[in-house]
Each structure stands twice: as C-alpha cells, then as structure tokens.
Amino acid sequence: MTRTPLALALTAAAALAGCNQEDHNIVAGGPADPMGNQANADVVLPPAIAHSKIYRCKDNSVVYIDWLADNKSANLRTEQSAPATQLVSPEEGKPMVAEGYSLTGTGAGSTVTLARPGKGSQSCKA
Image (cartoon, rainbow, N blue to C red; front, side, top):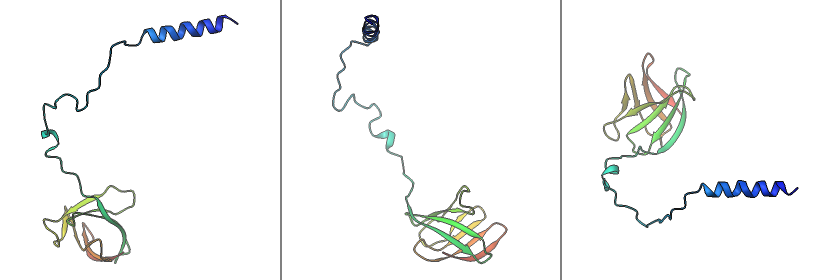
C-alpha cells in the first residue's frame, strides 16, 4: 500500500526534473521583423462568394454557379461535387470566360446565357 504513493511521487519528481528551468520572458511586440510588412504586401485575397445558385438550362442540364463579390468572376460546376471552373471577365458587365466557356449574366438575375464546350450557347434559369 505504501509502495503506490511512493512510486507516484518518484515518477512525478522525475518528470519535473526533466523540465527546462530557464526563465521565459515574453516581450510585447517581440523582436523586430526583418522583412517588415514586405512579406504580406503583395497578398491579394480572393473575392468572397456573393450568390450561389442552381440553374436549369434549355437542354435540361443543371449547372451550379457561385457568383463572386468582385462582379467579374464566377465559379461554375456541372455537377454538385465536381471541381469548379473559374470564369473571369476583364471588366464588369462583359462576359466571363474560361477555356471553351462563356457566361453572361449576374448573380442578382434569374437567367444567364452559358456556352460550354460541345453544348453551344443556351439560356439557363435559376
């Protein structure tokens, strides 16, 4: 019965003896950053998703479009779990394009015109 507390005390003493006994000082502001603010100067965050809609097209296919807040890009998926194709426009109001794709419309509207490889251009409704 006296062996268990003694063994626990020796185990605890051995564990504490292995701890680093150095003082640790935390200084507000820390050491000066050698890169300054240069490290994050060129970082541009992607635009947020403004609208996510599901559209049914004239050929009875379904597409999923995430409209981005910059109003110049959208992510298009032909299946719900498929990887997205990013469509980009050089300026607001112009068609968003990617290789073989063209999308005209806005996230606020209920219809778009979509051209896809092998399907041509067609109207799609939300």
